[in-house]
Image (cartoon, helix red, strand yellow):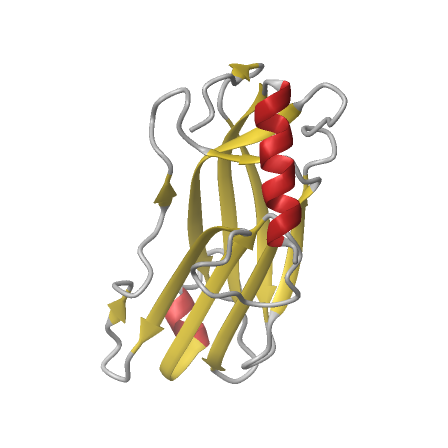
Length: 178
């Protein structure tokens, strides 16, 4: 656990919307962290929680209208660009969510619970030292010309880490890239 983090900001929210229009095809987006992470100053982003909001083609359309029959949707947030969805044990995985819709129009989230909450303490959270967060979405069985919009809300703060902690996180991130 990182103990030498000094908060530079209060908690704030970064958000990005991912629009999935192609059936059974991965869709990508990024959240630029270049203004928040600074290697020279050992400045990192501390992620406290990640929330997901799912909508249909418009803000007022329920997303189940965009999904036909038995449907599946998955979203992942990583701190390295893996080029697609990853397994749950991948070190780059920051957060994920999945929704399944059955023909009976029931929804289940029991395979991947969300939102992901990393705790309320000042030392709790996931530290990110990379300059981007990567979002990958995948939806199966979109109905007709419909689309699903997923908004990812990252609640975070900027911290300064000790030199040892920053180096440890950077090494772990580099090792996870291999």
